[in-house]
View 1 (tube, rainbow, N blue to C red):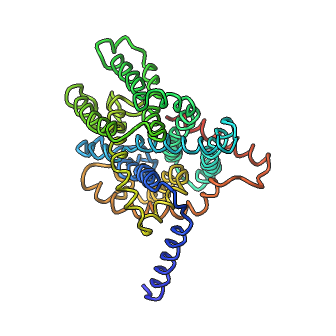
View 2 (cartoon, rainbow, N blue to C red):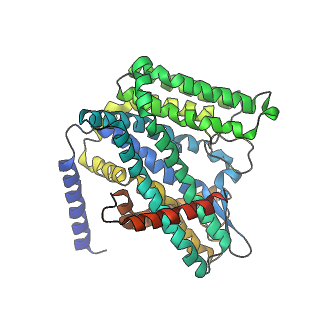
Length: 412
């Protein structure tokens, strides 16, 4: 590669790093942004490592999981499942944001609408684009089975946005609870999940309706958010953090060893029990341990991110948070779908069958990342306010998004 080009590239990178550092407010909580960036990047990394495909006789792709054939990888999901951290940081950030809005005299309802709109724009964008892509891809010869698989993959991560919007709406109530009882406000949420888990997995499991597990959705994800709110209200200190870390780790170990919870933090096809969708008590135990560790490591992480070269990528990831969440599956599919016309390509369309497949998939990760960067350059505009977009265009986008959601959810 041309040496002059590399020099220019390095100079541009240094300029970007300096510009980001100069524009960062002195009171910016870099540790929170660092934790959020880690939690965000764990989502595509986990999906890209585990999600595989099988190819039928007609060339159509179907979902498969590496964990089905290589269960020894399940402990990796303990690290890659960082949604607890994301909700923890989200609760802390919401407290600060709501406090600033209140000081400006902004009504809580106005603050909440602004937060929900920022979450909704990227979701509306990705689903509307896919609604337009489906007939085009079908016309180009992509099998219907592949389109159904792709639609399912795209819609799956978006459940998080809906749940996050609901817990965000509960922020004022979480603040009141945190001011009254501090970190203890999260305990009833964990107890509610424990009760539901006992009913669906205990001696009366055969008499319990399947829909009962859905009762874990709200308290399961609100748990870490409530801890974050308590943290933002300065009601979660180091002593409580140590209790969360040690208590969460002990509960996590006990649930695995004595109560036979599945080792994987994500769903595995063919297993009759799952820790996700809705979250089980094991997810809350992990979130508690992660939250305690995050609070204890906050100051050290903040000092580390004082280095401009480390802070710049954290800032870029945070500015593109919803783009990463909404489009990372599309980035993977941009490589997988063309490969499906070539047959069983190792690491892409060949069935995920163990360590060899995983090693090849690791080699594909830079390709997926590059695709996400390219896609993100265009789609990141969905995160910005839609100024100049007419009401008719917004209505059309909403209609397309709804159509795609119905198509995808019918397959889930």
